[in-house]
Image (cartoon, rainbow, N blue to C red; front, side):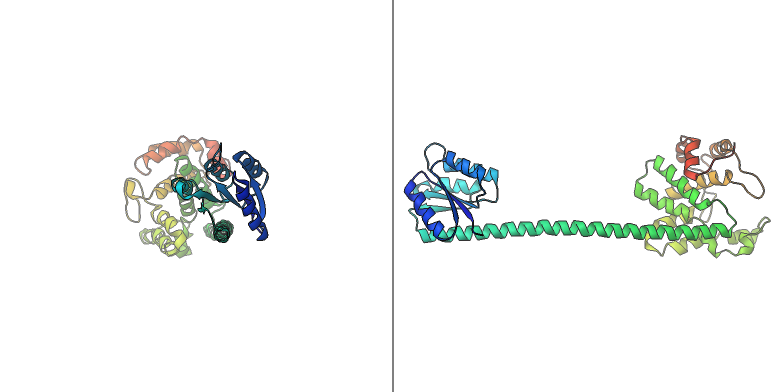
Length: 349
């Protein structure tokens, strides 16, 4: 489809000359003898290229140029000017005009300039649309990749949860201890204002905290009596075993740090390294507190579950020794019902 061209000039003879030549080339033509007429045409028609005479009575071609660029930056504008007004022509280029034509002009040269200008504009529009389409495709593909990653992440989580449930069952641990401490960790870490991505790492570490027990023999792990010194030394290897299992998996490197340090104490009397205070990863410091919560509020072979008030007393008593005092302070602000919701069970009264 040929382009639509508007010729604006106060000299009718020049307009007719240009329109006649352009019509023979198959262009659709409009003409205007003033800025006012040009504005009316521009508002009611899509114009691909405008030929503007700079010097017109009343409103000049410079003002029409501004109108055109305000309506559509894609419209090609060629200024028609006498040699004596080259300064204004150059000003028009800065205002957005694409080129200028000198009077008196050669009609063949005008046609060549018009074709070249339209071709250039066509290529610019085509290139812009290409980039817009490319951005759209990239955005769509990015969305697909994100969805696929979410599916993979969900599959990972389901697999890890199934594995942990198997480990809990091996220890005769009923009621999904590992899932509860994961939920408790999420609640406490979120209340502390920790970034969501870091909360996810800590929660996964809590879920997998006892993964190292896969390497502990049933004779030790399930022994009903108190462990002797050698057996206890063997049991204390499970944080290191867990770390060794997880640290080789790229997306579990963060959780592996929690697993390694989940039996450390704030006062440095924990294991396996006897880390103290801020040396202990934050996720492990959070875990040690919520693990105590779950242990105390769960039934054990040697006792019934303790009430939540007993947990408060124990956590307060061990503030600064077993537990990070700042984390204890946040823990104590969270009401009982929030912990019960997170653990999906009611504590004993």
